[in-house]
Image: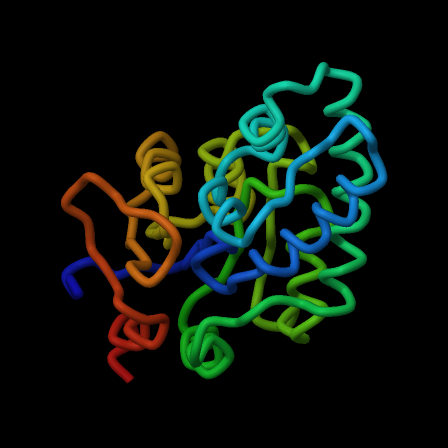
Length: 213
């Protein structure tokens, strides 16, 4: 870790950074697909991992290229509803030592989440694990249809952050942070890889070095 930078805030990606909900999402989307005779595809958690970090609308174009726009809209609306229901019931897998790490970080840093997910997804994550108290604000693609870079920028402006850093696990996360003018830390344990020289963490608890606990 580079201790020469004094961050004042940490902005987290969600999927592949704070938790892994791919199995629950795969189950939910398969349940949605089963309701339509025009969908003949069973998704695995690996399929979901491969689209992690993409904008919610773009995911359906990639996974279901043979559907027309109307079919895709129907499937997406149904899958989105079932996904939140499944997540409220089953949750996902938190990465190790998340809560302990947040407890150490929160007294010194403002904490945020910015994700390319649908509306309600971040809130469901926070409610399921009772993590709302740790985070100052969240932003997602589904709320304003804004790309991740603009949501990062919006959070920075909204809270007048001077030295924020974005923590994510994919090339898309890195690109969004660059576009937003915010430094980046790669969560190497997540879903993707980054083709750039960046600071890295092997596990969430590595962030404790930021506060030199």
